[in-house]
Image (cartoon, rainbow, N blue to C red):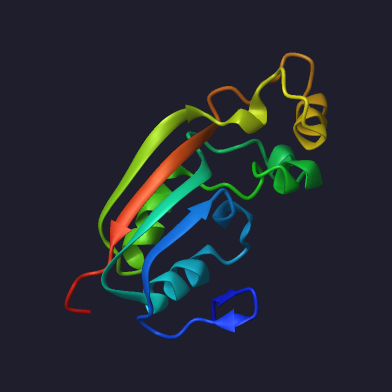
Length: 143
């Protein structure tokens, strides 16, 4: 059951689900979207800002603890993200890529971001891998 603080949300009780950069941290993304569909009222919608991948990360970056905590290691490919949301039952799913994710900015002051970047080889970069996405979708009005 999806929870918000101490309160358990009932089936079909929510008009909008908003999420900002947390779904990429979930180890069970299909379950997240099953719960989203469960709590949405018919005609309800999602508005999600998240981190996704334009291309597959090198394995050692995926498995790096700092990469996971820093929202990079748990990210999935943009097309996979869209398929996952559609498979959950949401309709009219749109994903807009908003450019490179701030978590890989070479000038970041964030200690986790710095640890990710400092773990790269000398000529290595995450440029072109990690992007910010905006995800929209609707629960069919008759479901």
